[in-house]
Image (cartoon, rainbow, N blue to C red; front, side, top):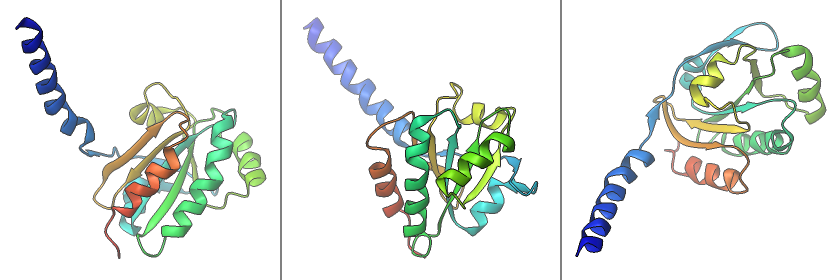
Length: 166
């Protein structure tokens, strides 16, 4: 009897917590400088469409593999789903170390530099990278993946497919 009650309570907790864990949350706004020392804001990018926000660092080997794939994914859905990508470097040295890395990967997408890691800490307190978030046009995070997982790109594409077409 006691085991059955505990089991029922466990199921109730899961059923209550599941929608909370799966429901989107509001993305925190930020403004950071890009490669041309221009201020880029998340809100301005959202006016153009949905945004893949990718936090990365030059010391992150998985980031090096993931970044070109994120660029390709965004390009594949740029017109139909209005998807763009924003790379956020968390290297404390900023542009001086990040730019050669971006050049080597042939990354032409928008990149900003979070040298104090304040923005990153709001999204990923552990500062674990790679970290990818899909922010829809309404400013809601509809997908997130922190750390290297083999399913990230597939799950991200699935989330993009759920976005409304233009």
